[in-house]
Image (cartoon, rainbow, N blue to C red; front, top):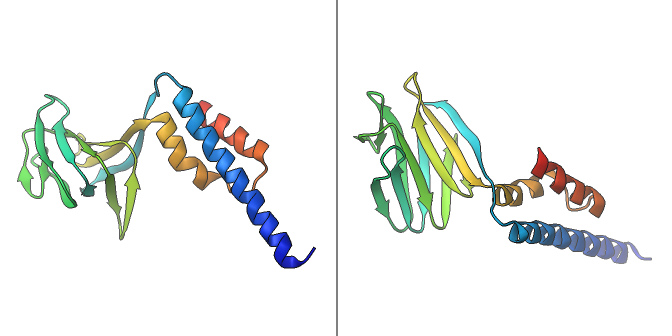
Length: 170
């Protein structure tokens, strides 16, 4: 077998494994009656949380359910704390906890990098006057974002399946 043919076959094998792996994720997610929600801390004890919002978005007071801001398009927002209350772009809000939802994309600035997240984002002030940002999403959505980063597609199919099961039960 020529080297070019061998590498092409390796590529096809990896591609097949990746497709089957992603298919497993989708099938298991579709078969589940209701996804359990999980919460993942993205930032803790932060002075500010900078957001990138794409599509239709809303910011809702977690205490009252009142929509504080909504819009459409590509927008940014800087959340900070003013006198133990949340501020959006330096405008104080009458709350200390909001849920941010975006239909297309929700990004959080981490240093110079913008990281995109699935699901919603809860932003809360803590007792020290700093912010916590918590990603709130379904387990299957979490796994679809995390597993491809944890396990190379070149691993044997049994290892991919085992990782998917382990991640669900962790």
